[in-house]
Amino acid sequence: MEQQTVVENKPNLPTEIISDILSRLPAKLLCRFKCVSKTWISLITDPSFAQVHYKKLCQNDEVLSQRRRVALVDPGLNSIYSFDLDEFLVRNDDVRDFLLVSEEEMECVYSSDSPENFVTLVSACKGLLFFALRNLEMYLLNPAIRQSKKIPIPPEFGVGVCSKYLFGFGFDDNADDYKVVFGRCFEDGIDFGVHGVKTGAWRVIEGRFPYRRIFNDDSKGTLLNGGFHWLTRRTGGQTPTIMSFRLEEEEVREIQMPSDFVEEDFTYYSLGAFRGCLCVSLWTLQDVGQHEFWVMKEYGVRESWTRIKLSLTMIDSGNIMPTPYQKNDHDMLFAKWVSELCLYNFNDHSFLTLPIPQFHELRDAEVYLESVVSPN
Image (cartoon, rainbow, N blue to C red; front, side, top):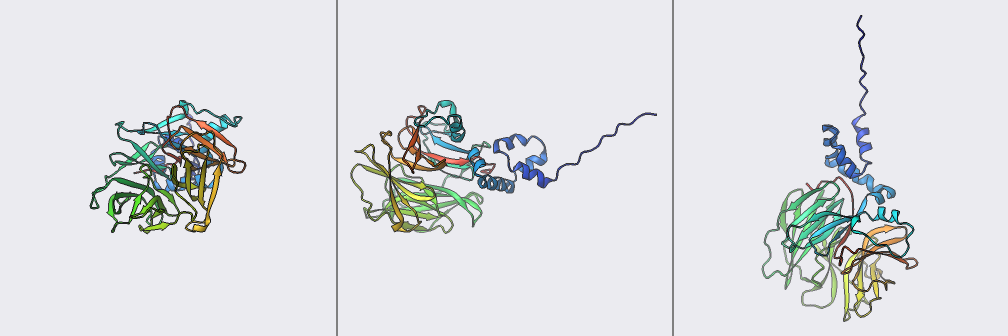
């Protein structure tokens, strides 16, 4: 009698359990797992899975530190590089004052076709980088999954000679959509247009807002408390103020600078975010060791501006800018116009400098999380 071989079919795991397991894995590993089956491809590329994956990533500080990266724009202003700072620090945890960052640590995630088409790295949101080129081409990029999306060129709007531009990018929870904000600066004010990534269309905001940008290289908006923020002056005035474009309401508001803030000769200042608060960083050209932050500890309350002096005499030039990166009581700062990052302890004012010889200067630095959120 012929013996038959019985093959038992092992039961498959429920889709819910597979989804839960996959949602805890790194984005780059999930990209490799797409080849397992059509079911896994469908699951990993599902937008709802991407949101669950990102939410779990943000809930665990240890996991978050393993999945975040620093994005930097190179000195030629035509490429974006990604840098795993956390892993780099783990490998060099015995260094205390000075740590050289080699070229091998940098991963190029975008390069412009033309050296004249300078890159402005505007912001990071849910694993997506938003950047604009000199010719006004705009892109969304997820470096972890190597996907990008070109934003349609904004339509011509506004009457007059436009000399400068403003950019912003963020997620509007109320509209459940990513929004790109684009401003055209005229002599008598600023006109805005808004692009909804989901709808794929530009809308022009009615009215011209009576503000003008202060510095030529401050086109990127600081996203905080549901709005983009820029350093401006009111048209016809000289007093600096902060203009905010609200992402949900799509309206412009004004935030006052510190009451004792005084513009002086040879002083440069920029706007950023420090530990979730608006921050104005100042640098006095005649005093290379004088760097300070003005931090608005309670959003919109002028009296909450607090002055913090920095002890960064090693950095011989460039405005010191804050970033969202924090690790072991240290905040990552970057020196604009020179090639150094810095991990600064605001408790004892000690710091670790991270020179990057590959770069002659830094213009933009953003911190992003590696996600599977698709720009498409």
